[in-house]
Amino acid sequence: MRKKVDDTDGNANGGFDFDSVVIGGGSAGLTASGICANFGAKTMMIERYRLGGDCTWTGCVPSKILLKAGKVAQQIREAGKYGLIDGEPGIDFKKVIEHVHKIRDEVYEDADRPEIYEEMGIEVVEGDASFIDAQTIEIKFKDGEVRKVTSRFFFIAAGGSAFVPPIDGIDSVNYLTNDDLFDIEKLPEELVIIGGGPIGTEMSQAFSNLGSKVTVIDMAESIMVNDDPELTEILFKELKKQGIHYELGASVISVSEADNKVNVH
Image: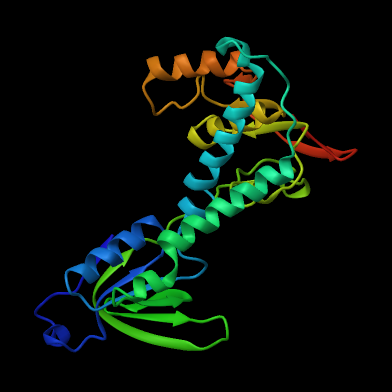
């Protein structure tokens, strides 16, 4: 979202610190900052964590790496299709996750690190931004310091975070979201995924192919309800053939933990 300051304002003739301030250093923020700089705008980009955002660290990149590992494992099981010998793959899940981290770091170094954008003339700042008024933001740094910045344009690309549904008992169990899923080192023997959307579907296939017993629960009567029904039905049948169990049209009432296992009701 872009916040434009009226050109009739008294500061619009050059009284601002920046032409453009981009809040958020994920995919959208990196793109917006780069475009602004390429057009000659004096630009600042603010990110509270690490540049790259969800896509690099907890979304697109790690999920596709995990899917690829699962695909290779499944191809080994089905090697007979190609005249080879079928076999059960030996999976060292800790090494799989180490590979995920390695590729994430490579993507960051190649495309997301601050120096790339600083060379474009962008000031990259690590901190939390909040608006004081339509023309001014306040940046809070980890050391407690505060900086006020004015800008003619603001681009809000702050992203989002994983939604944890308000299920009874959820705070008392050890659950995962995409924020920490790619940091576990032990492959779950069983995995219950609440939600059959794109992320739930990707992770169900990846973990099933890597050897977990996976169950997907969704309130809807089908998976990926925002996508083409004919295509999602083909995918649904294929995923069931790969061993994923589905409970569709079902709601999770509560969860509890006993004997190091989470029980879903």
